[in-house]
Image (tube, rainbow, N blue to C red; front, side):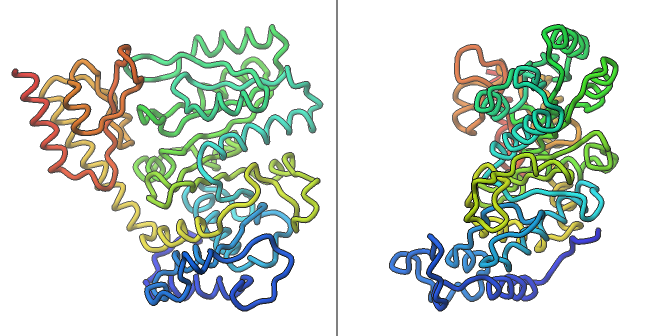
Length: 412
């Protein structure tokens, strides 16, 4: 690990307070030009005594705006202290977790995985249009039918065609024959440029796509492509549970990755991460943002620097070994649940390195689904799956109660 380590509470507090001192202080500085300020002091008390020991809350009150992208060119100097915190977070994620070379990555803390995925599609669309002189109708998105809804949302926003590849019902693997047929058909329909989306933990199943399924067939048919990894759910699980994974920047065919910090990392909602290789994000530069120092390369524009601080605090509280231990505990609880389901001959899907177990709906009564807040694949009578997500708050006692209810239902 080059950047990631465990810090004490005092070290974390001092680091964030030092960063805040480098930012504009709206309480004391004569900052006349910014359409911004600290949080309203009549509602959010910046002199509350507990704030001195709560650096993340201090940052929320200080209200830094991290508009722009801080890994490329210049940024708003008024918030340079917490911008450096964001760069430290991105180094941990890109280099230490996803095996990029130092200084080879651009990115930012986004308002969530949906934006980060759309940012990737937008970036690649513009790359093909600006660098390859592609026409809009020559570009197409490839994704599995289990892919998150942010991908069809992005296709709709960016006026791109989307090809959904079917997956096998039981193991959720992409149908490679169907994939190849769709690529052949797309090329026959004058599609020349492909944006491939591979999943690192789908929302419903936790399934992980084999990136070679995409790249080998695209290359077989001499198709130009860019490959994005949607690790919004699995990004803080899979790299730790599957140490041999090559679903990272050590694979030269992967150009960008989305990760959500508000899922497994338990940061406040509205905290995603987008990272990509150097030389790509410039394709979404908004030159009209002349009043923004460094202009803007993000979809959202203004965003809270406090979210970057929250992610930093979590990462540097655990350190790499503490996080590996946390993921390992969740894996053991997942294995416990799967063992109990096996004993009851209940059919389910589980990606071996993930902490989601998705159970055939025939084994789940409406009462059990409601009692345990199980999420269906579809909110209608055609639903065939319910999922159990082994998050940090789900302990063995909860699983034991769930299993006992399943036994009662089966033997009723």
